[in-house]
Length: 448
Image (cartoon, rainbow, N blue to C red; front, top):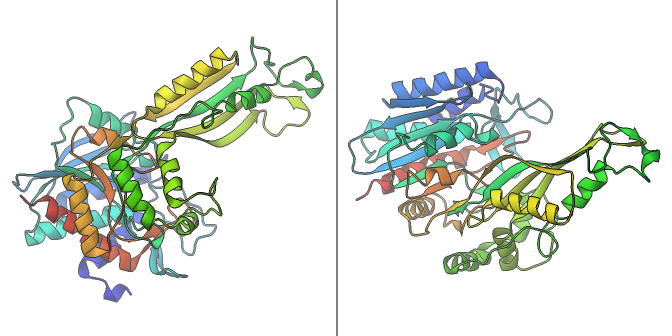
């Protein structure tokens, strides 16, 4: 299969293989430095890009801001990431930090390795496309490149950089996060925005409200309050309407039109398979399911624990739940967390702390923006007509890019999978189409 790939795809695959061998995982400072050095060398040597800035907070992995100025009238922003998730050897067909070509059942020939899909394959491919277009003179748009090493941990440095009033990023007619968007092997997706998110912890510790300051025997339950029970009481208020504090919105006319079209293309069973689930929380039509997931602010608990953990016959001195609260672009996740605190106080549920580790709003762009129009054309030319969503149900800091570009979208043909699991992959056939789709998008964005 490799022999049938285009020269561009073979070059992109080789760069992907080389960079997937670098374990640029949070906390591995040596690997992060090596990855940054390799990227900056490629930008300078192969693309002739100017390094505008290298920005980091607290000595973390830097945001690399580079610029390709071809003297064009228009500028675009290309974003990508160079950090990856950790990986052990269990469940992998190859060493995750060596990578290799694997024939995957029902999928075909793939490159497998940590970062293949998320996101070193797309990053390497994006840079190789730029090199080819520079070499053959077809790049007719200036490019602002923003590459970060904290995507898996919240993009703190990137957001701070982009939101700085003195940020030197030039304004773009569109921004793109090149990625493999044929999720589950289905039609490519075009998300016209992103949800907002708040991450944090609901915590109950012993104190004046009545819980113990140290673990005590459970025989004291008749007269000493239990932090775990108080946590359960608090979490019962952290749900969907009508019993909880979270909200739902009404879709506006444009979003309703998009959802109506999307519902005709949407396959609930394929979506369940893609998300490794067996059923939705309710039985409903495709349109009803899409409306529910797009309009509802939802809280998801990622862990529940007590201190001490897994102890028998004790009343714990503390209990906590970690959560992610996602909401449609028109709602503010930080305000929803504030509303939750207010509700607990009004109902007299004392001793509960709602601690936010991070929060940022969603964003939304018009389906008629230049970036979306170019992406639809790129998909139709290299893959097939896309599924268009009014926004993604997942969160991303698109709001920070909105200050610098008329749109910020995630896009690209091609298929990958298992991003945070074993045998992370990208299909070889899809990689070739991905490269073509990014080239088409850049070409369309350079048109007058």
